Picture 1 (cartoon, rainbow, N blue to C red):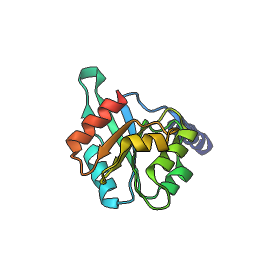
Picture 2: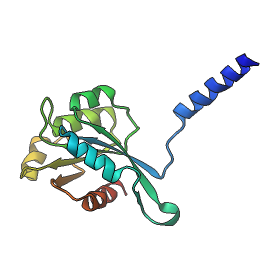
Picture 3: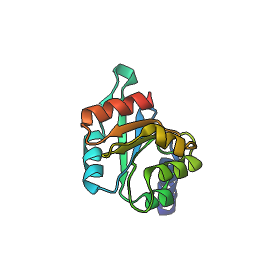
Amino acid sequence: LQSQASNLHTIVETETKVSPKPPFIKRILVVDDDPDITLTFKTGLDGVYYGDGDKKKSFEVYTYNDPSLVVKEFKPYFYDLLLTDIYMPKMNGFQLGQKILELDVNVRVCFMSASRVNIQALRELYANVSFGCFIEKPVSIKYLIERLVAELD
């Protein structure tokens, strides 16, 4: 009897790990070398609902402060959107975006920066990286939600 219970627990645990995410959850991967920013974005976005009625959706937020760790631990086909800072040590946001798109072509990528950026020049320099959107920091959570919703829908 104990063996059967153990097997049942293993089956339930395995099925839970491989079950697909509900369609109303949008997984956001936030990468910024500043822990205060990732904490603020996670606190402000995680669990936020948007949309109406049966089309209501929610954000599920995952954060990293080290872009090289993101590449090492990245799960293809898990995230809906990558929101990454442009200027980070070790690897900039465009390099990270390029590596992530090599692992998962379906993830959308949004870039953010506190510095003035010539977007057109960056589009030419990183022609092989898909620019979903650009967000200038500082940004209010309300505006961030609006931009992410527009990008995901």
